[in-house]
Image (tube, rainbow, N blue to C red; front, side):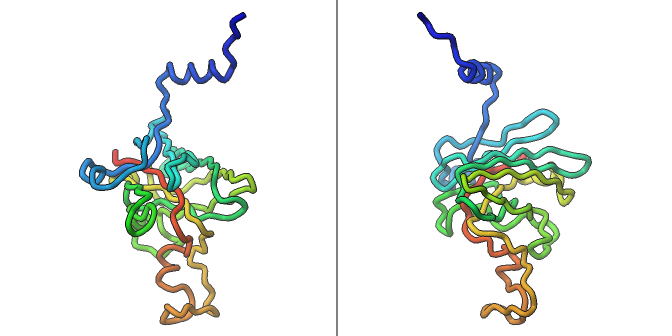
Length: 213
C-alpha cells in the first residue's frame, strides 16, 4: 500500500513550489572579483525577503553552511537576527561586518581575509566600528542565536558596496584593555594597534556575503 507523504516531505515540496531558495556562500561585488577569487562550490548571493529584509548564509572554510543572518530595516536602524550551528562549542566568538563582499576560504593571507577589515566608515577604534556586533555565545551543542538592533548603519549603507559577515575563532575584547596592561608591541599601556583594529578575535572561521545592491 503506497505511503502518504510525510509532513516534512509536503513542507519541502511546498517550499520548492513557491520558489523559495535559501542562497548561501560567498561572492564578489563584481564579475572581475568573482573571477579572480576562488569561491566554495554551491555559492550564490543574498536572498531578499519580505519587508525589505535579506538573508545572508554563512559557510565555514570547508564550504559547509553554519548559519543564516536576517537583516531587517527598522526605523533608520537594522535588526540583526542570526541562527548558527556547527560552531566550536561552549565559547564566545567575535561577530563582525567586514568591508568587502568577498569570502575566499583559501585566500593566501588566511581564510576569508579577502573580506578586508571591519566595516568602519567613521574610522573609529574597535568597539566603535559600525560593523562591530555583539559576540556569539555558542552552546555546548555548537548552536548559537543572536538578536540585536543597531542604528550605526542602514541596510542601504551595507548594500551600497556590499559587505561580508564574519564569525571569528576567539572572543572579542572590543579593545577593552586597562592601562595596567602593556603589550610588548605597544608604545604605551592599554590596547595595542591590533586590539584597536580587531579586538583580538582571531581567525575567521565563517563568512557570508551581503551583495552590492
